[in-house]
Image: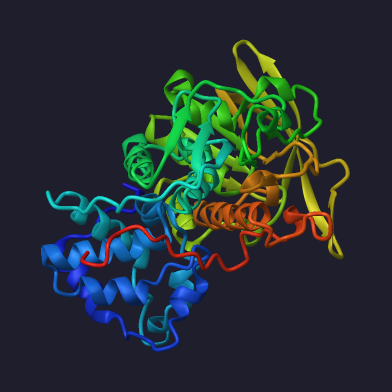
Amino acid sequence: MTQKQYLTKAQIINELDRCLNCPDKPCMKACPANCSPAEFIQLAKGLTADSYLKSAISILKANPLGLICGLTCPDQFCMKACSRKNLDIPIRIPQVQATIIKNARELNNFPLPKPVCLNNKNIAIIGAGPAGMAASAVLARKGYSVTVFEGSDKVGGAAKLIPNHRLEQTIIDQDWNFIMQLGDISIKLNHHISNPPDLLKDGYDGVIIAVGEQNLTQMGIPGEKLAISFMDYLSTPEKYKTLGNVAILGGGAVATDCAITAKNMGAANVEMFVRRRICDMRLTQEERSWLLNKQIDITSMTRVVKIKEVKKTYNLFTCKTRFNGTKLEDIPKSTIKRPDFNLVIMAVGSKADPQKQMSKIVYAGDCSHGASTIVEAVASGKNAANELHALLTGQIDESVCPVSKLISYKAKSCTTLDVFSDKN
């Protein structure tokens, strides 16, 4: 099992007790969503129903997608900053977070958000991925009536591509159902918006575009269309199930998800083809361990130059690569044929449509900054919501400083949602 499992009672007691409660809270400073592990860990230490509730509230005030992030956050943020690493190993903060929210939501007395006063302004959000979901939460608490337009039949955006062994759709639905309680939020599924400025003409006061990276990166090689895109594969992996040999073109986190999924579905051999060195693969230590545990083969310093179909299987033609200084180049006369692949999956990346600067329209998430983690998308959505609010209330003069230039998922998203009443 490769998923981040919830912690048992004994495990969470151990993790909570290891927290040093650092005064400077490096874990909070490292969190893009500005969540404070130091705070929610201290609140949870009693392990009572009240402790779990208070701790979960602390998390959800900063990150309305707290459960999703708890199950998917990599070790490059709060865990990397954890002071405990200087003594033994970092606290498993994401798993602690996920376990706390899960336990709190299983209680019958999880508090409802306090009512919000509407400001009679309407916001349209295009895309119900992590950035759009987070933006909805922030704007709803500020009194806006929010309508989310989602092109597919489910919320989640890129999070829906995360395999079920790591993140089930029901988990995404849980966080979305929480967000829907935060104010006047409605959603229109299977609803594509082709021209966002039209929404302003329809009576919306502002628009946030959070559609992600919808276009596949092309390799520009012969036979490229014979490969299945990672989007198609991860959306419906059962459709492409094979017990044979699988080739994954790419070496990032998405390619890793494809490889693990193929192996879990019974593929005899799964091989990843990576142009650079294994040490150059942008993977967390945990993701690397998944590949080892699942016996995924990684063929590095190799570029696929051609794909050819032969009797319902595929031949890959690959050449070796090498570094010439910092430049990566093909090694002449190194091309070989690799036969008998039953499935080829293209996972070399994606890209967004170019941004268009438009008044009262703000971009958020991957379509603004490029591919990122879910927690970074949450931070971007929060920041975009705050900037749009500042624009609509006259705190920012868009003619002087375009709002899109101010937003970054790396900028500290310090908003704490005013969600629950003081007695909670």
